[in-house]
Every structure is written in C-alpha cells, then in structure tokens.
Length: 389
Image 1 (cartoon, one colour):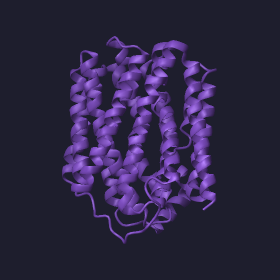
Image 2 (image 1 turned 120 degrees about the vertical axis):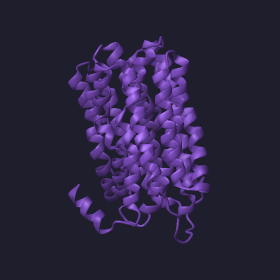
Image 3 (image 1 turned 90 degrees about the horizontal axis):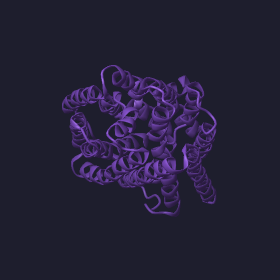
C-alpha cells in the first residue's frame, strides 16, 4: 500500500483534496451503523425475518428512485446541493427512527434514510470518476476515495452495538441525528463541485453489449450484497442468541479489512485488470458464504465474514465504467448502475428473508453464493467479449 500511495502522490490529479474533504463530511453520520440494530428492532416491534426482508427491499426501491433524482439535480445544480440534501434527509431519518413506536413509522424513517443514501452515491462516484480520468491509477483513486467515505464503518458496528447495549436503541438514533447535523453544518461551509471539463471523447454507447452484461452482473452481485448483513445480523442475534456487541465486533473486524481492501483492491485492479478482480470478488465471497453453513462459533463466523470482505468490487467496477465512457456520460452510467444495484437491493433481502423463514439459513447462504457465482460467470463473459476487441 505504501507503493500505491507514492505512485498516487506523484500523479495526484486536481480536485482530490476537496473530494476527500467532502467524503469525510459525508462519512460522519456513518459512525452509526443501522444494520446492527434494525433487524432485531424490527423483531422487537413484532416483525419476523421476512419482515426484515420486506423493509430492506422497500428501502432499496426508494434508494433507486432517489438515485435518478440525485443525478438530475447534480446535472442541473451541481454536487453541493445534492450533498446538502443527503445530509438533511439523513438527519430527518434519525429523528423519525427515534420517534418510531411501530413498524410503519420505523419503515418511514428507514425510507427517508434510503432516500438520503440514494441521492449521494451516484454523485460522489461521478465526481470521483471525473477526477480519476486525469490519472492512470483510476481504480486506486476510487479505492482511496471510497476508503475515506467508509472509514467510520470500521468502528461503527462496535460503536453502535455498545450504545445499544448500554444506553438503548433510541439513543443510537439520537446520536445519528447529532452527527448528521454536524455534517450538514460543515457541508454548508465548504465549497464543493467543479465543472466537468476536457474535450468530448467518443467511446462506446451507453447500452452496449458489454455494459448490459455489466448491468446484469451487478444485479446478481447486489442480490447477495444486500441480503448478507441483515440476514447475518438477524441470525447472530435472534437465532444464535449473541449480544449486539458480539455482532458489532464481528462486523467491525470485517470493516477493518474492508477499509484496506478498498485500496489494495483498486491497486490490484490497476495491475491485474478490473475484470479479473471482479471475478475474484464473486468466487471468494461465494466460498465464505458456503462455509458459514457449517459454523456457529463467533470466532469462526468473524473469520468467514472477514474473508467475505477481503476484496471489494466497487473500485474495479467504478474504474471500468470510467474507462469505457466519456466524462459527459458519467452521470448516466453511474446512475444506471446505481439503479440496478438498488434493484438487487430490492430482490435480495426479501428473497433471502423468505428462504430463511421457510427453509432455514443454510439454504439462504447457498442462494446468496449462487448469485455471486452467476455474477462471476457474467464478468467472465464480459472479459471474453473484451478480449475480442
């Protein structure tokens, strides 16, 4: 990673500093990890594991809608207003979650939270792609920016679990509201956004064969990604009867590895190829899921959860998109991928929740592994077509 940092510093494109500052501000509210508490809080309010799937799918639906809205606002008014709206909606969501005393109000708060995430993500990726296009270390830069954005998630599961165990779930929501309010104030004082410059470059059309394959692969990847943490959380707390802090430590271990893996995944992608890294992501995660069927000890679970997060798809996938499209199409390309991701988020939790409730967690992990193997197979097909050009 030191070599990657030295290489990056020598070829550091203009605009990285403000993008890193924005990422840090957006990351502040991520000190609260709602995935640690929401599945079991749904159970506390009378829901089942299938209800968890429905709620997470509902969140994905509204995240997809807001991805379209966020892209439109960015194109018309710039990044700053999008980031302000995201932080404002995040603050509101935590306030609603604090007030929730039934599943309907809880779902309303979670939908608001999903809207905030949906308008932010494509805008941040598009801004990163614009800057990354000025360097040869495209995937590495995506890894660095995404690492900065996700840095608080290293401690957020344990932090959230500690608050929930010792002070109560509602104090978790109040803490989230305070943190996102601080982020909103900080964002209002920083100037962000810059025009997409450079000359127009003719690259492949938006809905080329290769991009359609990537869209299909992304859908299957996010079926598994979306269901993994909520199903794991419900399984650890409700079925295995471990505490919030145990779950928090397990997820924190994964996030520590993930923080570094976003950077080294990007560096490996720059060296070995974006598609090769994406194939590896699918195979390694599928292996971890299949092995989870046979373990119940917290240490064994933690090791497999860490393995699951040892390679990240976002840096190589984002770098691949930035290389095959011109700058003026980044918003459309990343917005389309974001929508497809959210379709995966809609399908994954509700499908996994239904299977877990009726057929058990072992079959659920098998289903999630199959989705990842389909993802890896589609990327392999994409690599085949790329080799023919």
